Image (cartoon, rainbow, N blue to C red; front, side):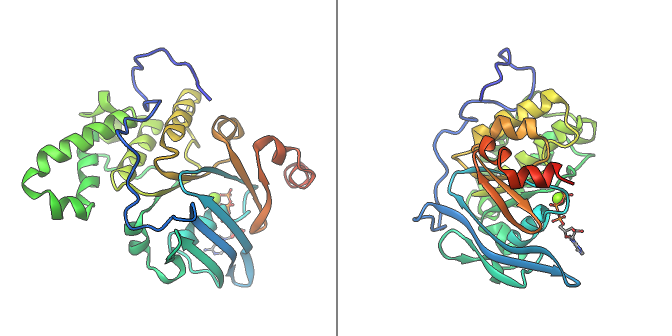
Length: 277
Ligand SMILES: Nc1ncnc2c1ncn2[C@@H]1O[C@H](COP(=O)(O)OP(=O)(O)OP(=O)(O)O)[C@@H](O)[C@H]1O
Ligand SMILES: [Mg+2]
């Protein structure tokens, strides 16, 4: 879906191919079966309460998946399991064909290529936008190991590409603390993208954004899909409608419905869960 903003845009993420010269390389992750994330029968209990209760889900490589569901459905807990923050009591979680997420620690999972965006922006407020990207780049061990002498030029190139991609080039010298809420979110997303994650998990990314920021975020996500796989948890249904391909509805810790937005919105069980109480 296109939004038809006048070009050149004053700010905001770029649309189209997001400045990618080529698709990201597959690296060592085995996605030969086309699946980047596979969850089966995941259960997580807190003091006997099952926040996840037999959750099974499969995300294709390059897919943009929206996850919706009422408060307490287990959406954030699902992300906690994928990123190693919470250990499931039971179940299977694979990243690609061969990485068993239930056996990996949080930093290993991040290094393997799963990036996570929490709801609240966490940027370095007293540093410029450019410096925030530079700090993010320094987290990338490959840069330190392989570029050394050329790190400045190479880093500058990567940062300027990312500034364009997330639409913050005009704000490069601003202190991050002075950005709008939406701009901070784009900055943090850009910082995550500096690590070139294969899978990006975004928990309520447009909460608190203006309508225009929300529309620009939709364009950004659409432009990232294919280059990355995205799992987007969101309550904002207008936003979901603008980016949705396949939508998964979670309820009481498991998948209630899955399919195109219209089909899940017309699902009697989904209607019951959202409206029936
Ligand atoms: N650390 C925890 N200890 C105890 N209960 C928890 C913990 N984390 C989550 N829960 C419970 O698990 C259930 C699922 O929570 P979760 O945060 O995953 O829901 P959600 O779908 O993300 O909801 P929301 O849309 O409100 O963000 C809730 O009932 C929550 O209270
Ligand atoms: Mg949540």
